[in-house]
Length: 85
Image (tube, rainbow, N blue to C red; front, side, top):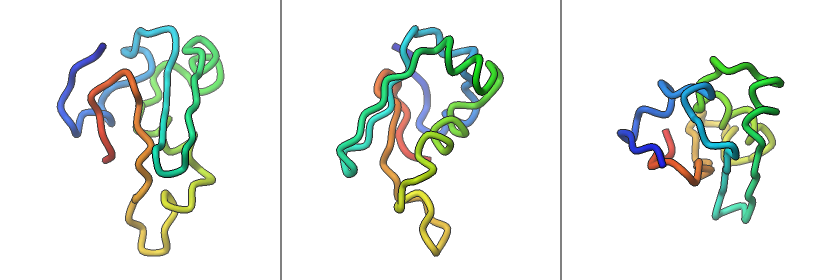
């Protein structure tokens, strides 16, 4: 498990996340997604920051795209100590 500061998600890239599965979960939406890291690298590239990956995976979330531009989505990567940014 990677341990990092709360605001470091935008600095960590898919390349640095070495687990074979990237798990994203949102308790509010009751949604969980497990992604194969190799597929993510092929589709988005290894240099993509996890913060951008989170935004791409939650593009349909009404909490992510609020009218006031505040990100209220609570989607988080399960295998890291990184919360919402």
